[in-house]
Image (tube, rainbow, N blue to C red; front, side, top):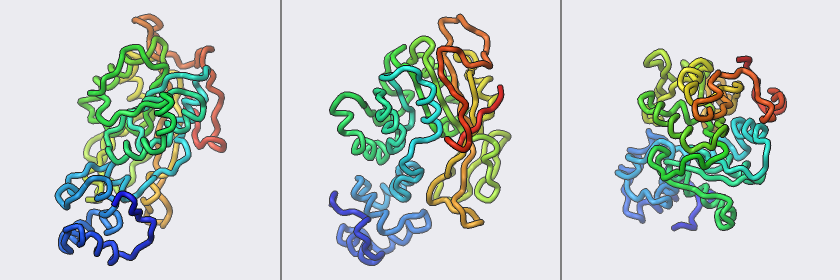
Length: 313
């Protein structure tokens, strides 16, 4: 079963026949179709360890999307990773990525000579990244953890840099302070944090509805009440300013996912803001700095070359 791939291009009926042979019934298969489950994706979920319709219904949103949409953001590095790579001024840095998905940015960082550590809450994403990075893991250049960043065993002042691409907007506001404090705790003095989140320009009235001033939720039941907490530069400063110097903001854009096609028949683009921050040192260096320090090399990044634009702060 583990060798069966949806790339074998069977028909829907052939996939259904395989599921029926595994003990499923047609009603269960058809009941899951409104949630985006095709017979092929159900078989892929089965191979990933979700054996019953009940387990499928309880699957987390991101594992569901990785199964149904595969590498939904492509395999090129994100714009957040591009900013981090340009900003790190030394090779062989120890970098933590929070929410690495299926490992595209960890791969890019490894290719730049850095040692990477990643934490991911989706079991499907985690397993995909393990397959991609198994050689680096064998050489102890990569270490991956399945679970929550808040619960992961991490050493204080251990990392040169922390990055999170399009993760911050998924965190409930009640948990933000604890997450920020933990990022500051695990970074070395003057360590770098490069974190992006979807911003208010990303609100899509065709697909979302606002539920409060900063928060929207997707209308599609397939998204399982997928909630987005929008971030602006001002919100970054308010929440991160006690622990970090805010160095720069960049405006980014990429596809929301390869399967998300809008009413204009084009892939929907998502708008986000990347924040570049440096950890404050033991209560010193306490002014929020709107200029880049000379110790960091952050060249001007243009929309043409990287898809991101600097924002004046």
